[in-house]
Amino acid sequence: MIVIRVPGRLSLRLHPRALAVGAAGVLLTLAVGVLAVGHGDYPMSPADVLRTLTGGGSPAEDFIVTQLRLPRLVTALAVGAALGLAGAVFQALVRNPLGSPDVLGFTQGAATGALIVVVVGGSSAALAGAAAIGGVLTGLLIYLVAWRRGVHGYRLVLVGIGMSAILTGVNGYLLTRAPLMEAARAVLWLTGSLDGRGWSDAAPLLAALAVALPVLLTCGPALRMTELGDDTATGLGVPVPRLRMLLLATAVLLVSLSAAAAGPVSFVALTAPHLARRLTRAPGTNLLPAAIIGALIIVVADQVALRAFPSQLPVGVVTGVLGGGYLVWLLATERRAGRL
Amino acid sequence: MPTSRLGGSGLRLAYERRIVADDLTVDVPDRSFTVIIGPNACGKSTLLRALSRLLKPAAGAVLLDGEDIQRRPARAVARTLGLLPQSPIAPDGIGVADLVARGRYPHQGLLRQWSRDDERIVAEAMAATGVADLADRLVDELSGGQRQRVWLAMALAQQTPLLLLDEPTTYLDIAHQIEVLDLCARLHEEQGRTLVAVLHDLNHAARYATHLIAMRGGRVVAAGEPGRIVTAELVEEVFGLPCRVIDDPETGTPLVIPAARVRTGSSGGRA
Figure 1 (tube, each protein chain N blue to C red):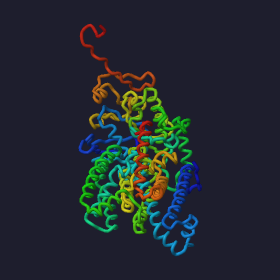
Figure 2: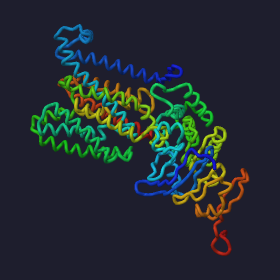
Figure 3: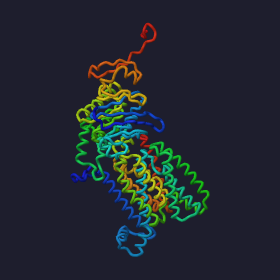
């Protein structure tokens, strides 16, 4: 641990390993990002990409980078960071490593909103908006059913599983009601995809992140106190019910808007915080590392989806397979360690 | 009448609709080691929860320094009143020093994360509870008694003049129970803190408390110095236990000896 002090005013605590993991994560994400922008029908070398990004490209290159490829990359980064943050917050609130939006039903709620628009008919913007509303409404419902009295742990996970089962059923029904062409589009959306994302897709999520990130980082220390139990945290001066409300609202907003931007990309919210914890070897909640790892996972998964297969895959397929595998591995090892 | 920074009057304590205590009035004398005793479900833990603002009274108010504790900012209260709940949770993989350091939370801020004072106070708290040697160990690896001392160290690091402990000796064997209670007594004497604890064992309470609150059915039956209030009649009234009260040969405090079982049959039970 490194401590930086300005006597009487300021004292900061820094964990070298967490810093190193964070810095490595950011560098790696940026490097993969540069490769991602270079990839496509008009291939560009990393040098060309960097030159274009700093304003030295030809008009054609400029158009390809800033209008076609950069929006997709930025959407991916924002979705990954938002899901990593939301996952870390949910896991801390529920005090359960399974407390991710996929398991708790928020993702399915967002999908229900989107599918209603598919059935009724509407623009992409309406679909995104409906996804956001669906996620927020599901959050509200789960809060009213289970969370108001401060219930957490397995009970909340079980309520969430029930909720997501109901919503999965509703989603299946909605799919059968959708016109065939629209249903195909909906299935692609449901897998989670970054294809054809423009600046307008990224903008709402970026705005939400700009608000959520400072809020979450400010709440970070208090959130870590709640790991000791609600009673201990209250004793230490954390206003637990208010904190839980604020964090829940922020995390639901992030999940809903990232579903609106890229569809319900599965398992990133579950996996990123765990990976962050393992890499930083710091116990408890690590919000910023989780966000960085989340962004890295999506950018890498998107590149795998684009390059490793003859036909392009939606990114959600790759995160689903990787995340699902990781979950099985986690369950197997954690169970052995007697923690789950 | 001794002064009191913490107390409550006209308290109605309830979970949902179930009323545990009504019109309850208590005072915690300053610099006392107050112990609350009573049979199961008499409301003693509920009272402690109300005093530590974990439970909001349905009527009446808990006053801390003359102000309703529920209306004061959470952090300000946490700098005056510390709390060790019955079953605190140690996060997976947390180290002893890290856990004790969390007691400094109410004194810290975003730009004031770890001052020299924090460092010194955490070291002192670990020394006072005898866990300095364990600083680098993981909390998961410790024995029950060691773990309880670590939690006490965390509560001490909070540096509050008032410290509330909910059954700090539960789940410990007899040696560790005495160890924890000796530690509490020392903190009370040497650091001049006001301690409030809920205890199960009447003899422990009578030995360590300077002020005893005996409860039954949500009422305070008696309150005062153990030597003055612990009598066979009181124990019978509070616990429904026939007994004799003698002087503790070690400390001279009251010692409760439960009455022997009345044997059935005429020739004794040995046959």
